[in-house]
Image (cartoon, rainbow, N blue to C red):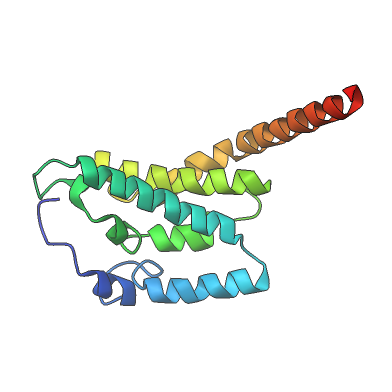
Length: 168
């Protein structure tokens, strides 16, 4: 993290920083999220759980961070939400209906793990400081498995409930 200081939260939120199209203004991305949720195109569960996963992981890493201010672990958890491609990925990429989890519980797990992986990649791999795309690609490969285990869990619960009512 040696180099230029991190811009302020408000500069990153409003987009007063240099960067690629789609990753500078979290405010514009938030407006896009509202439109996608209102029209039913994207899952708010994936968006919310991605933010929750990143925020909780960031807070956990902040708690165990060394005293070195140059450590990536010391980036405030809320700054992770507006820096780089995190907001864009959480709203427009992670919610892709073809490659994301399909079950309701699976969407929560899928999103949370994306948020977790983004922060872990950012904090522990300084050679690859933007982990959103890698986290989404990784979890896209696991989405069918997440759905499979969620469905199997539901089947087991229903079978258990069915046998309990039959025995009465």
